[in-house]
Length: 112
Image (cartoon, rainbow, N blue to C red):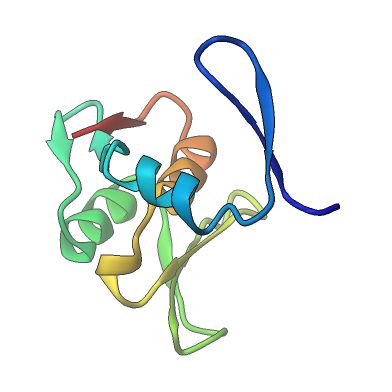
């Protein structure tokens, strides 16, 4: 039996065998869009151009050695690499949290 266990509001668990159907569609409308905020400036990152400028000021450099479908940054002072999809429309909360973790106290992800 495969599926996803879902907790209902009343504390009861239910196994949803096809999570891509009714449960996911019901939740899709309720989910909020996330935005990445640069805390020192209060600026919402709305494009790779603005993100590029912020990251460069923090010591990150563009990395051109990998996948042509990725937009990547690295720092000489660490082994961290930030990899983002080339298309900003695919810049989701997963990528935002990666930036937050690699730049502590400088970025925040919040609901729009």
